[in-house]
Each structure stands twice: as structure tokens, then as C-alpha cells.
Length: 184
Image: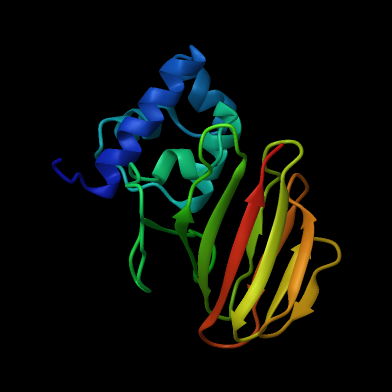
């Protein structure tokens, strides 16, 4: 099987999910709050979508973020540190790597996060019923609801509603975390 680049897989996934939902380019762009030309470029494989754009498209399409970026999975899958499809934030020093997308009939995704101090990664509400579970690997971060984030250190865990505004703000250099997203 020929390997495709991440942007080619993302382009095909966006197009597949848009067609599955019966939406036109214009309607999906409107629902996601992005320009139709941007969506057209993404579907053509010539764009470079940010985390924010892909989340907005996932919410508009009512699919998990990972369904837009995850390549087809083999039966056994190992991801070494530094591997996997990575997307970057436009607003902060934050990247998300999809470690595992939810299989059919399950509704959870797993991400590895790498972040640096500076602007927090603020997230708009995800699909209704979404819950986020975060475990800090290294460093320190403020994580959780936008109006009441929790300070966490290595090994600390927090769970909060992902369908309300929330944030991830690295407090020390080279902060890492694992996020598990549950979708109802």
C-alpha cells in the first residue's frame, strides 16, 4: 500500500466526511467559520490546516478531530516519540499528535501534547458531550475550564467537560501531556 502525506490524507478525510454529511463546500465552510477558499484548498491537498481549523471542521461535521487526520491503522501499531500526524496551534506553542483514533462504535481519541510557555492553547467547545482527560507527563501546566483551570505537575490527572471553553497553558519549558477525548 502506497503511503500518502499527512496533508493528502487530511484532504481526503475532509472531502469524505463532507460528502458523507451531504454538505456543500459553502455550507461546511459557513458552519466551521472558515473561508470557502480555505476549505477548497484543504480538500485539494494544498492547504496546511491548523489545530483550530481542524477542530472547527470536526465540530461542523460532527466527527472527532482524529477522523480528519488519522491515517489508516494496521492491526498492531507502535508510535515512537516524534512519530505520528502532528498539527500545530496558530495561537500558542502547542502541538497535538494523534496517537489513536476511536475505532468504529467507540468514541475516544488519544493525543500526545507538547507545549511551551507563552500564549495558552484555548479551545472552543467541542461536540456536545465531549469529556477530556489529561495526564501531565513532564513539566507543569494549567489545564481545564477557561474560567477555572487547574495547576498540574508530572503524573497529575484532570477530567473536565470538553464541550465548554477550555485551555492548556504550559507553565514550564518542554511540557508534555496525554489527552484522552471521549465523545458521546
